[in-house]
Image 1: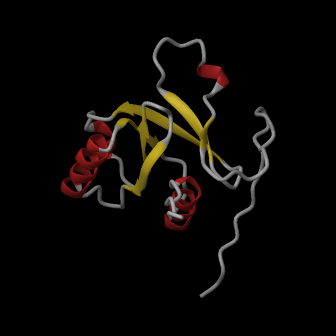
Image 2: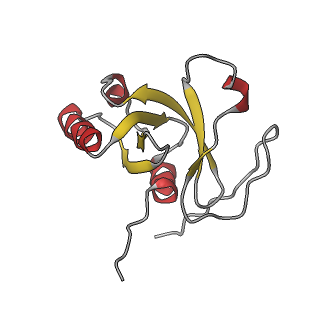
Image 3: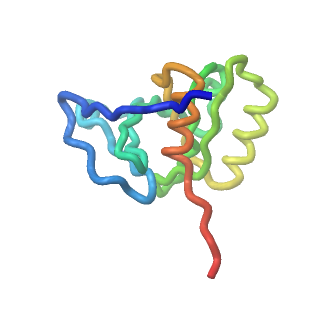
Length: 137
């Protein structure tokens, strides 16, 4: 199996990527800052890569209809608490269970990243954005 390689290309009109981080951080889009309703945002993964996402309320079922998307469950404290790939078929029963579980865990919004080109890109985004498991001791 061939190794996959990803190359980071900074956005032309955005600030340069910071050094790699230990957690993903939200980096709201400056171009939407004046809007009263937040419909889009961006996240900076641990790698420094930027992921633009659409914003939905945690109880909105519309994000469950997207296929081949990266779904981020976001808390009121603006932290990612869970991530998943919606899959190529949008299996609604599984996505609805995930939505209920993340809502119970404190998610207030679901952010949908649609720009990953293929399964490998979605997996890379999931790994870059997913919260790290905390270790005891």
